[in-house]
Image (cartoon, rainbow, N blue to C red):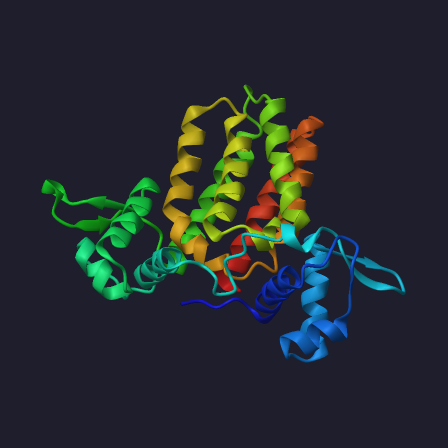
Length: 292
C-alpha cells in the first residue's frame, strides 16, 4: 500500500504527539522537543513543523520559533498515523489492490472478509460504502460484486486530466456563467479550513470530496448541464487513483491556495484570466500526479 512521504508521515506523528500532550493554543513547540519525542533527527522535525505552519496548525514567529495555532484537543480526525479503524484500512487496501492489478474479476463479500480480516458485517459495510461511491456494483442476480469502470493506469489518469483541461476552463467562458454567492462562500470556507489544518486532519475520502466538489462548483456556474455531467463523471472515474495520491499531503496547501485565487478571479469577473489559470493549475497537478 502507498506510504506517506517523510514530511507527511512525520507531520502526522507530530499532530498525534501534540494531541496527546494536551497543549493549549499559543504553546511554544520547539524543534528539539519534536525531534526527541518522535525519535527523529532535527531535519525531518524541522520540515514537519514547517509543513504544520503551512497548513495552519502551527505559526512561526521570527526569531522566536513555532507556536500552536489552536488547542491540541481540537486536532482530531487524522487517518495517516495508523489510527484508522479496521474497516477504513480495509477499504483502502481493497482500492489499492484493485488499482495495483492485484484484485481482478468478480468477488463476494466473503472474499473481502477472508482477504482483509473482516467480519461478515464489516465486509458488508465496506462494500456498501464502495457501492454508495459508485465504485462497485452487484452482479446481475445479486450474486457477488464487481468494480465499476474506474481509472486504474497512469496513462488513463493523464488523459483524464487532459480532458478536464478542455472541459473545465471552457466552462468558465460559457455565456450563461453565473456565480452563486452562497456556494462560493461555502467552498471558500472549505478551502480556507484546509489551510487551517484540515489538510492533515481530514480522511482521504473527505479530502477528495472537498476538492472535487470545488471543481464541480466552478463548472456548475456555467449553467451547462452537459459540462457538469462530464466533470462529475471524471471525478467518479478517478476517485480510487486520487485516493492513492492523497497519502502524500505535502503539496495540497499550494493547491488550496490556487483554488482560493481561482475563486477570487471568478468572483471579480475576470473569467478569461480565471480560465487560463485553471488550465495551468490542472496541467501542473497532472504533471505531478502522472510524472512525479
